[in-house]
Length: 126
Image (cartoon, rainbow, N blue to C red; front, side, top):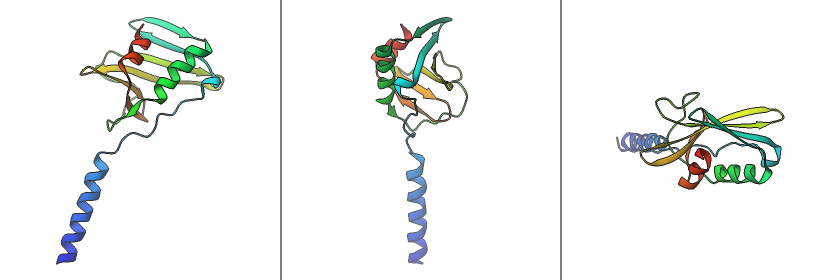
């Protein structure tokens, strides 16, 4: 009987600890492999091709904090967002930045959702 209770307790704890799983680290190409970054917000597109600008944007993304919020769609639903396209020779990848409840996030579809700083979000919305 005691073994059954201990087993049930252990299984419960494992299930509860799995619920709070943080996103995996964001996956991005190395800055030197990136040809350009395009941000689109409110119908206006800005293209970054300068190596220093690209480095600044990517390093900010790499410093983002993983959350336990899952990314389960191709694009955020019901939110005003900035679409970020990272172009390299092999193709492109897309991220989305948005604010929710005053907190800025960056979302990599199906990979995870990450907190970014307000300054990083402002850089994307300029």
